Length: 153
Image (tube, rainbow, N blue to C red; front, side, top):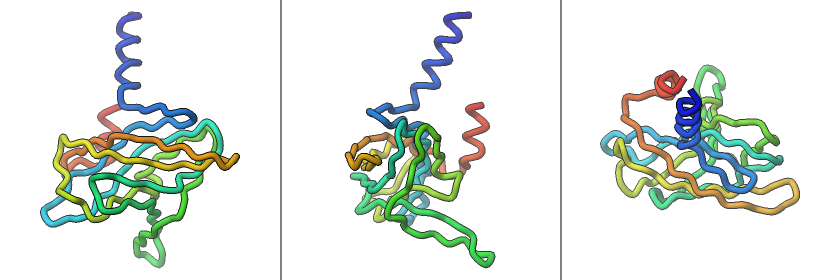
């Protein structure tokens, strides 16, 4: 039983990145369709101290942005954000809360099974900055966020 519990714990931790004050996990993007030049990235992030994501970049794209998606007058609207606040010790799930990271000007299509590197820059309340690298798994075009969450519970 102890071996089983240890194996399960290691499996759960395998998808997480720990860097200083930040824990990142379940970073993923959906494979792109032919001609698609942008992609949204979802991930889970927790900061031990209050912080903000102030920048994102990726060698897979010309640029990357923090985006929010909201419904206004029955229409979904996406906007770039200058920063995204993170409360201390409170997990934020980008992708399911309307906020996400956007890769713009993809240098090549994203194919299922690929990995996409992202560099996040965070600024903490005391003004120090920290850069964190995360690998996002590229999943099949047909897989939804909800299907993946169900598979892991």
